[in-house]
Amino acid sequence: MDAAQTEQALSGRTILAVFAHPDDESLACGGTLARLADAGVRVVLLCASRGENGSVSNPSLVAAGDLGHVRSGELREAARTLGIAEVLIYDHPDGDLRWADVPQFHDEIVAAIVRYQPDGVITFDDDGLYWHLDHIGVHERTYTAVRSLGADAPPLYYVTIPKGLMREVVEAAGGTAVKNAKFWGIDADAFGAAAKPATFVIDVRDWVSRKLAALSCHRTQMGPSHPLARLDAEQARQLLGHEHFRRAPTESRWESIIAQMGEPVPSA
Ligand SMILES: [Zn+2]
Picture 1 (cartoon, rainbow, N blue to C red):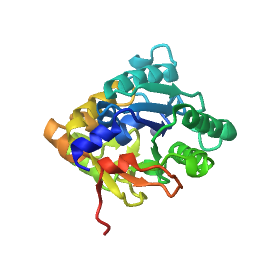
Picture 2: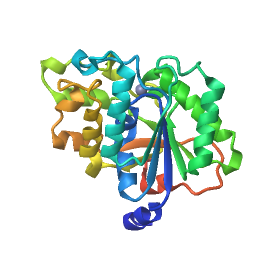
Picture 3: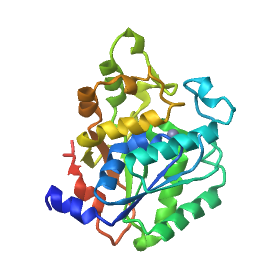
């Protein structure tokens, strides 16, 4: 199938993305979600929490003190930027997603799959991007929910950030000011350190500006000095132009539509 046929085959399909906090969707796979939306896919985002315990780039953005409320608004703005059709924000406790409300969250993911009948589900891999326990919890709940549907389940895809990429972002962002920059308090080298190799990548070079625009909607998370905010267009295209995935080991009798738009990664 050539690129045009693949985009045509995507039209009218549905993809469900399941993440932990507002901004995960843009950081992990904002380019892919925008590309899917532009191809006519109904993208549904399920966000487990409002991110109420996250960091704050500038306290004046949270004047009323309700970070969860502000971040929910930022998420809706980012979703509009990416073309996401529906955003479901749940109130599970930020920081405790691996252990809190386990049966309830499982049932909510199953219910979203039953309601939206997605052709594919995207979530974190088991490294949680950087061992973030909330991300790992969302990975676990989503895997279990998809598996519980047996062969009727849609194919499940795990998104990862490759090892070394965030270090390259810091270096490209340049200058001693950002040399030891952290991402939301996380060391750049933590990203992807435990990621399993991707099996396919999706070319999102033409959607990088939308990914960055969506990330910058998350103002409480990404101030102007953030390394991702300092990349110029060419650096961003080069560093963020491919998003990395692997198919989860779950059954599905359905064809794999996301993998069709990707390019296989040759195994090392
Ligand atoms: Zn997160």
